[in-house]
Image (cartoon, rainbow, N blue to C red):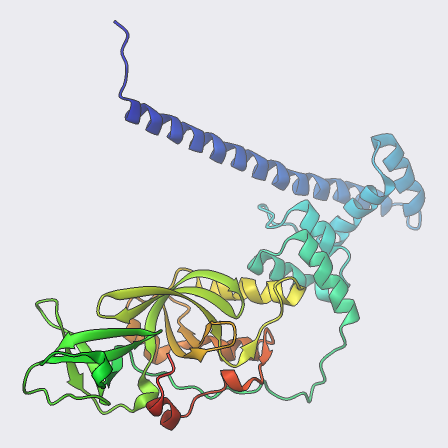
Length: 356
């Protein structure tokens, strides 16, 4: 009798085979592209060595070579220039032929820098052409332009909340409400001797039994609205989709915007560069955010703090991290956003009106 393997096992096998075929095709394509770069470099080396024996005859010989090989004269010229511009090629070329071809159009003084940038930031050929073109048009920034503007900021403290009061909360005896931020409130039971009422700044602590208790702390309102978050998506250099831990085992998704800065549109060369930098910097790392209030488009304004190395302890990130908003200003990847809705909020104002 024929053997009929279980359907689920067979489906899994077919899926695994298809994945291996896909990976194999991808490796083969990558090898072809890499070999093209190596081959053109060697051809350029042969041409350069031959032409060195008869200086000043490049044009005549290149026309003959193009005709004999049935190549366009433009391609032959680029192959020769490729070798002359990059006389030392790594055994494992980091870029494709189209990327190297774009670099050939760059001024010699900028070519090395653009090569490093293309490798580090994975810049494609079309964007390289755009960067080179833009570089020819943009005027140099004056040396006395001064340092980037500085944003005032407060790191805040994780798991710190303000207790709320009011009859509308409909609290029972032994219950208290805390402002969790992002229009989220949490009701928690407190002991009779806690002395907590509305308007206190407290910190939540997880007990051994898995419950939460609130403890008085000496922080002021400027410590509030500080959270651990995961970056679900980088929309552009100043806009993100975050999954935010608001405490008490509650997570929520929110679209946020960096406070106080404005990054270029992602459709521009500088905007794509800023986007790539932010995406690479944040990676899959947890971040700490401090939120302020919603701007006119409904996004919460936030400060983002991160570490370049992967750290699992959010308290370390909160204390020792890089302030992303300011970093983008310092790198010239964003400009100051002079909008009152994104200005730092004074502690006194924050204490009177919850902003998150």
